[in-house]
Length: 353
Ligand code: NAD
Ligand code: UD1
Image 1 (spheres, rainbow, N blue to C red):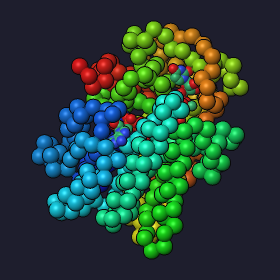
Image 2: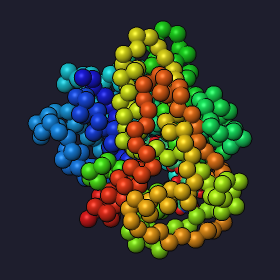
Image 3: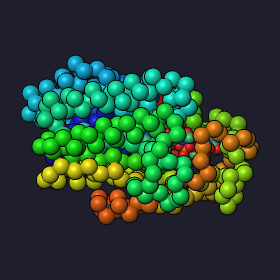
């Protein structure tokens, strides 16, 4: 059992990962500003946790606050030492993730994603905690690469959000290069995480405008939105719609637990970037048809213009991740559609009543 600081642990990927880490017996300090999540996640995670209330109270510590707040982060590290559960590693999810918003408000994205990460690693150094798993993205890759992408494909993000992710990867690389400091670092480059915990109690809870395909699809299926607007049917793909590498959120959460285990067991410094993907591309129409078939529903849709900044095809090899972490995705597109839809049906307004 280890003590882990989870930034952004109330969010979509963070909440699923926290649950698995709790089940593995880890002691968690979670910091989240709730800018894109809800404190109600605590009660949901507790309901799912198998070891009872007392253990939950002991293992799960959620602190509301911002990763840019130096005093707060430092106090978390200090109190972890006082409580004899000194933080040994960090999983760094906290950040803003809308490509569109990042082009409209770039200084906010640089401040939160990069400024917040600099703040975090400075305090980690001060408290001799040099193990970190960082949430990176498929968006770091150049759109000129041919698919399947691999970790050594060309890096050239085409938007501010992606640039902030590459900058944090570079920051972490420069820490790894410090002689004698023994940083242990994994950048997980997620492709398209969708689905939800099979209980339907936790899932994706986007606030404000919905940009991503799957939450939008869910809301069309539930009747909250009239129709799915498919951005382009003239892409150079088999059916004209874009192809993505969708990965089940539960598989993604398992990858974090394995990445953490790998680093904690590692005797010396390390720096790795790993794709979290299935290696399979699925078009929007294919995803929609799967969703309709496994959930016995009909999705009204229209084709509209391409969305600026989109690419036709994005999928990647997970060979390096499989061989390094002994991870492979266990769930398929049908599981993603069934579990994601269950979450939507049980929580039509997310965590809001
Ligand atoms: P999310 O928005 O659900 O989770 C991020 C969490 O960070 C939220 O709970 C939010 O409230 C919190 N947060 C944001 N700014 C903060 C700040 N300044 N201080 C403290 N907490 C803050 O998003 P997610 O999908 O769970 O993504 C987690 C990470 O993975 C993000 O860094 C995101 O960029 C990255 N990522 C996500 C995807 C995806 O498709 N979901 C793909 C690639 C990378
Ligand atoms: C997007 C971001 C990516 C980010 C990821 C997670 C862009 C260009 N990329 O990935 O950087 O890491 O979200 O936040 O924004 N689509 C529709 N109708 C919709 C929504 C989406 O047709 O209402 C299409 C898109 O054009 C795309 C596919 O569905 O072809 C998937 O879109 P989305 O879920 O936004 O993911 P990405 O674009 O792959």
